[in-house]
Length: 367
Length: 255
Image 1 (cartoon, rainbow over the protein chains, first blue to last red):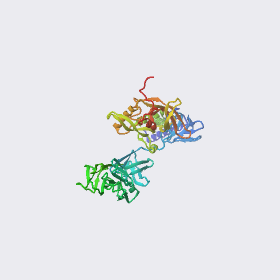
Image 2: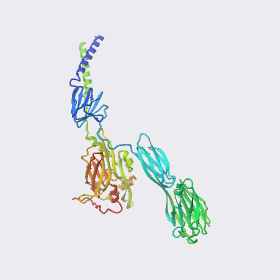
Image 3: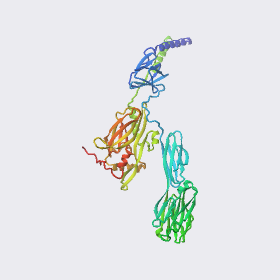
Image 4: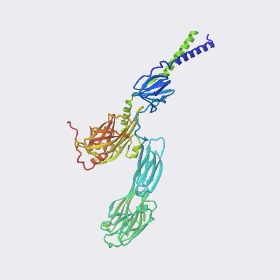
């Protein structure tokens, strides 16, 4: 029978033998030699340390030199001469082209300098426009784990801040351009984006028939080629005037308009109905006077004045009706003092008994 | 009973030796350093056509794995409507690419800074590209440069136009749908090049002299192939008036 005393003796002897053998180990041959290789990786457990000399780096197991390498790097930094490095409990050692790279946490050494600088995830910027309301939506698309703030600022021709809005990346920012013009937009989200864009919001007048566009007074007699004078007043309102007087002929006829509220663009239309009725200094271009205002979403035509002996007709294109007669003078027909086109483009016709004076113009809001 | 005791002692000794040796033996694996840059370049080459294309330099400065492009208009013959049509294309002019292997960071930065017409000493017209080159590994002995000369530019653009009609996105010259897909339309000729290292900065300059008719130059860091174009030259060559000094390149004939 094995008594408890015997077990105690056996265990004691076993521990003694183990201690004797263990104490012999590091000073002897070691577990196995570190192979000399040019491209390989090791995990070394035990009392390994590395020391840099002038022309080589030596790996030691306690006091015994195990192997030599060209130079030693620890966590990406080369050791200086005479410097030691060790890791506990384990040392990870990469040998590449005879150079030793040591790391204590097992992260592999990386070769290659960083030549690119900042490396941020890609942000896609897409700008879409709704022409009717001139509303721009800027979508920021990115594969990001956190959200970055982005500010979008829009400046007009004179550098005044018109719109300032904030959003996030990923996300979107939208704003409306309040008035026709050329704008500079700054998208700023450091460090991801710092960009300037040019935005153009305008009303294009095209398809002109016997019509001419002015940005200031025009008092000349232009009946030989133009019966319709279109005065663009947008810039006066943008400059902050509260009222503008437009002279349309040399006889001194003028129309005073006050600043519209919330207009995108504003025009005065002055039309002459007869080719040879009046002298050059007579009452020209006052037979039909209309105001055409682009609001944020609609186009509004307002009647200002009608005169002359001939009959006139004013037509506009409007959704969903097509060409609509809105005004008749000296004639049976509708007399709408104000007409709203719920769209971003319209064509205006002004016709009379003297068909050589029929005029036409198409207005398109372009954002 | 005593034999059992000796057995236990022997077992303890053997167990200790085995455990100690297992714990202290160097764990040995080989590192295949040559495969890692190859794998990184192969990965970049595979995804290159789908990398984002940016035309704002501010984005080219901070984003990685992007292609800097210039937007241009190309003229193609549309077989559907039987007339010439103009469509937008992207011209690649720079790259910021990165891929990390286990031990290797592969980065390459290319940017066409200047390109213009020039004459070679022999008198041939050529386009001289000045390309900024930054590389994370100072090892580009195998850098090769080819010039892609189209057999028929309109045919090539008509082929690109089919991608434009299918995708509704501007295709990129040399990159759509992948690098090398246009080999039927192009002849690759070796382009003369010289790499100028700068002692004070990381940026080396690569000068390439390509034939004047070349649509793009192809930089090969095998297996990665990067097409680079000269937007100014393409704009002048593909405008309405045919350039007078651009030779008309016929189909390749055996010489």
